[in-house]
Length: 400
Image (tube, rainbow, N blue to C red):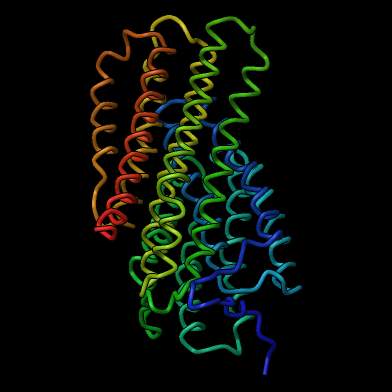
């Protein structure tokens, strides 16, 4: 019988749920995506137009997809095994090429981007099929279906890389749509059937930790962009205030995710009767909205630091308010997936940000940044208070 490369079952104690901690090789693999997130921010900073935004959106969705699929694979395969460790290092090489090609993905490096992407997505799936050749039929069937879908999209990625302009756009949009629709369609394949979320019996705590670490990567990149920009500026009152607003905004984003939902999300998916469904919705699909908010936030910080006083340019106001809105929306959707209800603090925050768009063009960029940061901080404070009430009330009821 072939050697098993699957993760062993986590050790539990006293009936408590446990999970494998993220390994060093997984953390090392993520370093490539620090570079990718930085590249996406710089791409958007250099071309903050409708076309530039569309390019950044498509590439961000592709980058997220290749990372989250790898996280699914390492949720099943054991990175402590030599073959899996070598896979991660090879994928890192592909990820470095992928990241380096991002600024010119719609230009001279389109084929390089497509080759790196297909190598990572389709090649990793072929490796998985080899690694699980002696495992259960449902697991093998699941990845046979995934491989079929990714094989179809691979043809379109490569065709787009070999084409130019509108043909490249069309091929890559269709390829990305195929891949993003795959999980929601159960990767239905004629002759192979459809996967169910029961086939995706993920280790929920590990998946939650992996996604939390990606949020840290994105937030770290935002701080890096802000800090490097500020270091090159004169340290006058306006620039120091702009730096402070940017950094406080990053702190509020961290608080909104890690203080109010990250651990609760991990506990919920760990105890879920259908962790595959929750991993697909809350972590595979919804988390990309949070990442988008952070990336656009880094762009907004750059714009505000460049021109903190004077009326805000429409693009600056859009970046500042839009980044905060995206992040609040991602938090709202994530908490809805975890709790099954909407959180009023986020809804109010989104309404305030929407109403702020009208006067934003008449305000200094620094004021718009302060407004958006205030909304993030206010939402975080509201959520912290609501959480403290949820914690106290059951204890009071128990005491009675």
